Image (cartoon, rainbow, N blue to C red; front, side, top):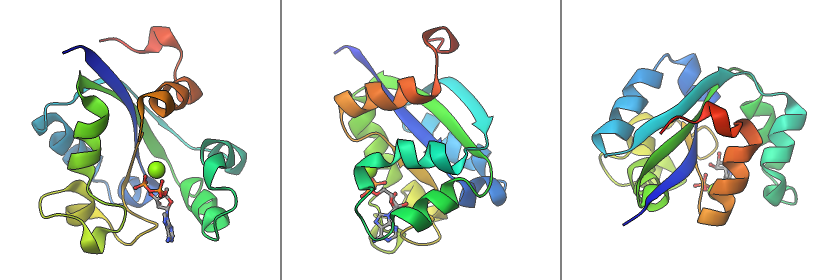
Length: 140
Ligand code: ADP
Ligand code: MG
């Protein structure tokens, strides 16, 4: 099976609580390899561009404010089936209903501040990786 890449973001609620290492440990234990990583502070406009598909949703403005409220860690994760594997270890969107052992269950605060983002398809992974990384920044 070929290697796949996905975009992950450790969100502001997690960087504020200084748990980026704990989240990276969960990703690595799940078999995902961090092949690119940087800590950035997103502007509101950058967050709006990233979440453009959710533009019409009632939570869009609050979400973009939250994502630009403090640093995030953007990362490229690589493995076989990386997209599905990451979604599995992340857990469902709402930490309250996420499976035991998932990142969102263990660390998420609420449905908005749910600690991590992960791409949901191969097509979106490519777009999202290119949103933050130049090819030479990714070292597999
Ligand atoms: P996921 O991150 O699990 O792929 P979505 O793509 O549906 O979930 O939503 C993107 C992000 O928007 C979520 O991770 C969460 O931060 C926020 N969000 C989603 N639904 C809600 C909601 N009902 N209320 C507040 N924020 C939400
Ligand atoms: Mg999503």
